Amino acid sequence: MPNIQVGTFVLNIELLIYIVAGMVGVLAVHYRQRRHPDRERIVSDAWNAVFLWILVWKGSLFLFDPASVIAQPLSLAFFSGGAKGMWLASLIVAAFLGFRHFRRLGARQTAAVIAVMGAGWAMSVTLAQIVFSDSAGNAVYLIFVLSGAAMVLLLSPSPRYAAQAFVILLVGTAILYTLLDSTERAANSPEERAASGAEVGARKAQLAPEFELTDLEGNSVKLSDYRGKTVLLNFWATWCRVCQAEMPHVEKLYRQYKDQDVIILSVNATSQERDVQRVAQYANKELLSFPIVLDEEGDVLKRYKVTAYPTTYIIDPSGVIQDRYLGAISYESMKKAVRKA
Image 1 (cartoon, helix red, strand yellow):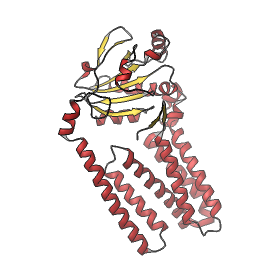
Image 2: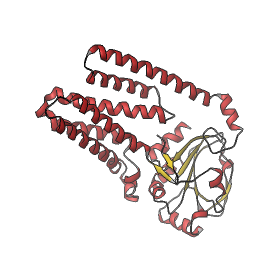
Image 3: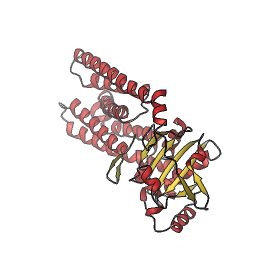
Image 4: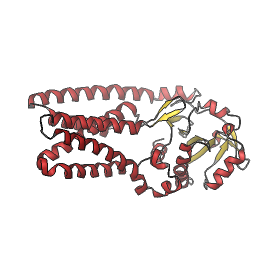
């Protein structure tokens, strides 16, 4: 999911969505247990489960990719364990809630608490994916409907009300899917792509602006040299802490794809550096082997409207921008993006 830029700051919308989804899950538990004499303790455990989920999800990066964390401990602040970390966190939270409630509530009520919290979380996350992501597939819509149905069944006072609410949810989802799908089809139609291909710009579906810069070895590099290949264009600076955390992920991606039709091209904001030697020293110190070109005048930054670091563009073989990412993106997200292009 895309991050949100506020001035020169980039907000991690994924983390925000998971926190809000956790709150929805807690509210669902609160509503279901509203008449239970031990409601406050149950709701308190639900809040603890949200914090535990976030902690495990973020910390699982060290379990699944220890090399990047060792290279840049700040990775834990900006990245997570991805989908595998989500599953691990969910299993641990389910076990935590089961352990806390099994003796007091019994197996049936404990399962209901876990289910309603999970349904509220899943419904919120999939809704955010549908609204904010361009790549929400049929599986996301299906999970949204199923989790919504589970919420309705677990919270409804009567079967009749549950059936009515489910029909409303189903119809609303169908309308939302139709509207978003028709918009996406129009944006990706041959006519739209042809029109956008004739227009040079820094937005999605526009032709990426051409540039010619010098790399650290003094060689001239043009973007058009890589026409016919997918290009991951990454803007960064040595003083940027988020960029430093992202570098091991960029290097890992480069090593995997360097012999394939995927180009990793890193544009350093040299106009904002102390000097060129600082960039070379940083690259040598961090053992960065991917191509780094120097934007000494800041012209390329202006063409691509870069105001926050890091910023990454995914450019398809025809030279059209497919995606733009603000802030740090993980190796897994980079890999998924270049495959989609």
